[in-house]
Amino acid sequence: MVVVLAIIGLIVGISFPAISAGLDSVRMVSATNSVAAFLNNAVTRAQRRQEAVEVVIAPQEGLLTLYTNGTGAPRELKLPEGIFVEAVLPETTEGPQTLRHIMFLPGGAVPGIGIQLANHRDGRRLVKLDPMTGFPRVESVTTK
Image (cartoon, rainbow, N blue to C red; front, side, top):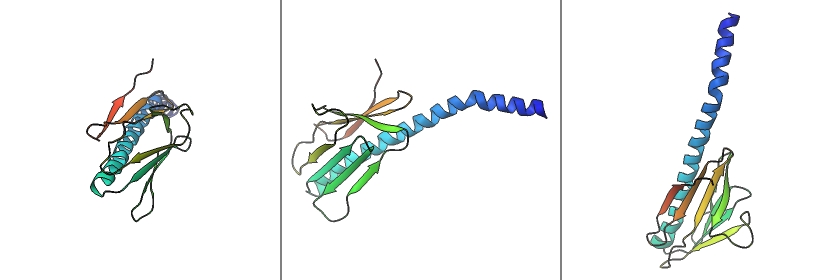
């Protein structure tokens, strides 16, 4: 019985890092897809509903908030545990962790912004808004 428990403990100990890395990868993919959908919602609201839309990105809190002139409460997207906003592109002189305000105007050009997400395992993904089409694109970022 002790041998069986030791073997089970060994198997669990060996497989734990792989399972943990897999869960982190799933969280990263889910978070980038959520950010892409959130930005797509902002672009769609500005273009189809003809409303000015402001997206506020708070990197310290891992929070994106969408404000409109229309009815309803602001919409929020909280990043999952272990995922954080590493940078909002283009960078400003104020630093990467400052509050950023992005405006989407009806009939206006879509701002060419990017939100780089990271996790504690050095996984990075970039959600970029294409200024020509207005569609978000997700890219993997390699570390140097």
